[in-house]
Amino acid sequence: MGIVTGTLTLAGWAIAVGLLTSPLYAGRVGPVPYLSGIDLDGPVAGAASVLAGLALLLLMPAVVRALARVDTALVHGLLT
Image (cartoon, rainbow, N blue to C red; front, side, top):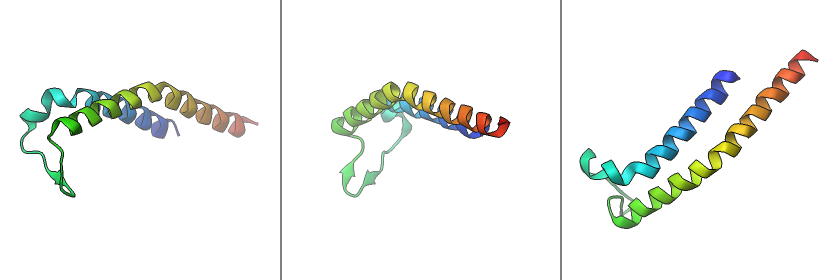
């Protein structure tokens, strides 16, 4: 279970930071694909990614605490 919670924690923080900083490197990566006709390279998409990254960054402490509670409950259940 520790591997799962550790992986989810690392992935959550990495995705949050990646989304938050994506406008800094988005133009250097190469051509950005279209998704169902939506231009993922425009300013609206950049702003949306920053907002999503900020929201995830603010949610991650609660997610980490919840995962720690799940881990604690599992250990408690296994020891009793």
